Image (tube, rainbow, N blue to C red):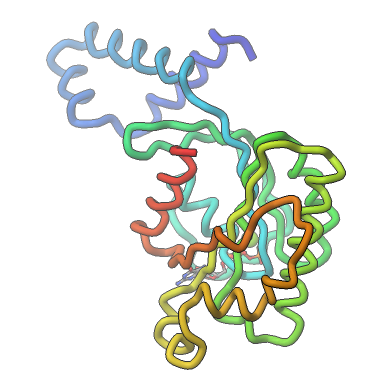
Length: 234
Ligand SMILES: Nc1nc2c(ncn2[C@@H]2O[C@H](COP(=O)(O)OP(=O)(O)OP(=O)(O)O)[C@@H](O)[C@H]2O)c(=O)[nH]1
Ligand SMILES: [Mg+2]
């Protein structure tokens, strides 16, 4: 897409978003200057915005669709709605004055049927993968095995495709419920996940995982802001 087309799309999308107080004030008191200001700020952001390929994977019900909605600023559907394959249109994440563009991708369901589709979304250098681990059901039989197999698959894909600059982080979801019901028995979420996944036996992965774990409550905007901040600052 040419710079001009890109700029036109960005401006159209920008006008659909809420304006800041300053922008509203400018448009009311000096409409011409206000439009010129918006045009220049969008031109600047079109030229300087970095692109970040983000992939969100995890087991069934671990929060993938919830996280996509939160990153896109959509209204949350709190009722569990299992996904098959949803298209994620390209969108922007803004945090702490920084903006990144997330190119179009897919939100895949968490059942084993979709594991073979991982390769359709892990195919670009610089892809960052958030793998969601649901703290509520990690004790279920075979759950740890499933996660290990999928992390191995992700690592193999990156190796086979010779992708560079890729990263992976485990987001440990439902931290609130874990804190209320399981933490006293199993200890901190990070310690619990490391033990359950037998991280020390995970060798030869093409991605470094064990240092990168973050317990999150996906319905809490403060935790979502931390993720947005991380995406925009990488
Ligand atoms: N309180 C809380 N609820 C969560 C969290 N993560 C997910 N949920 C809830 O868990 C349910 C399932 O979340 P989804 O986002 O649909 O999970 P998913 O990974 O997309 O599920 P599939 O598409 O079936 O694989 C929803 O009701 C979410 O509101 C979390 O960190 N905290
Ligand atoms: Mg889903």
